Amino acid sequence: MFLVAITSGLVLVLEILAGRLMAPYIGVSLDTFTGIIGTILAGIAVGAAVGGRLADRKDPIRLIAQALFFGGGLTWLSIPIVSILGPSLGSGPVAIVTLSACAFLLPAAVLSGIGPMVAKLELGSLEETGAVVGRLSAASTFGALLGTFGTGFVLIALLPVRTIIIAVGALLVLGGIAIFMKSGRARPQGPEIAAVILAAVFGLLIQSPCDHTTDYYCVRIVADPVDGPDARPGGRSLVLDQLRHAHVDLDDPTYLDIRYIRLLADVTASMPDGPLRVLHIGGGGFSLPRYISAVRPGSSNTVLELDTALVTIAEEQLGLTDADGLDIRTGDARLHLGDLGTGEFDLIVGDAFSGDSVPWHLTTVEVVRGIDRLLADDGIYVMNVIDGDQSRFARSQLATLNEVFDELSVIHPEGDIPAEPINQILVAAHNPVDTFDIDPPDGRQLDNQTVVEFIGTDALVLTDAFAPADQLLP
Image (spheres, helix red, strand yellow):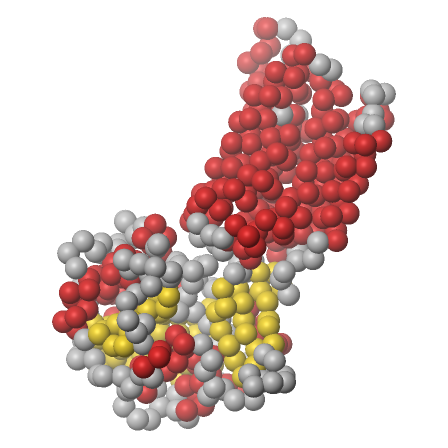
């Protein structure tokens, strides 16, 4: 039973780590979790069926030793598979399932075959079938629970993802060797041992694309060129998973390199002169709050950032200091909204992302009502979304904003909206929205009437009961 609990737990460890290992290439979204969970479940089903058939025909003890030994090698091999295939597969459900299956289907199947092999050993007579199957099922579930909670709550916070995968593989290989030696069964031959060693070497040598791995992101800091026409020695880009989220100039907080940040700054420039009270939902590289502090001295910037480690990275590598005067509160933004005062802010900026989508629980009409409560009477809510093609998510988000606010505006790219997702800036207020001074290459502003026509009649109003944000994206 102990062996069944351990192997079942390790399958769940791999399931959770798969999301973090693949995130730099396919992002993190509902599609990601769906693809990984489905792939692991397929592996469990295949492993149980094949493992049971083999246990009826061959020596179960030797099969268990082989499953552990080769399962460890396949676990190590998941690292180079993801690193090699990930950059070339693109994104979307097909890419997610393909990458998940190539990297994790076989190790999940091999480890899941151990359960029926152990059952074959423990079944002494038909009279105890129910008790044996029940004990093994309970042990498997208990191990899966430990693997899930231990990985999500403890291991990922303590060790890099690749280190955990290497350790899991080593534990399995050593377990297989121990059973081979104790049982005296035939051991793996030279080519089989060489294959497992080669998998370990590949797993150890392949470098992580991440400079840092937090609980939520693979983080890279990319320096701008120091020579040539595009030289900006103080420039640093923040890349989270597969997306460039922010850019800061360590020497000039007023320099805004990213188009959507410039558009958010254009919205702030339309507001009355003087200090602003601003709430930022999402911190990232903290480029916009630092810009506002620089161009509007005396402004207050409250930033809600999910990832505590990201704040530390910004302090250590992106020049964030106490002198920026930001009130940074870490944790889920929605949980913080109720702690803030009514009418406390002139401007609220929604710029929180999970992969290339806004977390669904920050898109609903219930959240919009909470944001409206925090705004001053003449306040503005501005929201960054990434959408393209028919803009189904952007239109639904506007329809949701329209349930609460009287005036809407949108900043679109010049010309037709491309099929590929692009940043669109949504603006909502109770008073008429001013015309923004926008650099034409950055986009064009739609007035309230044009926005109503853009929303159309088929856009969903997103609610806590129904907010398919990820599924609305192209």
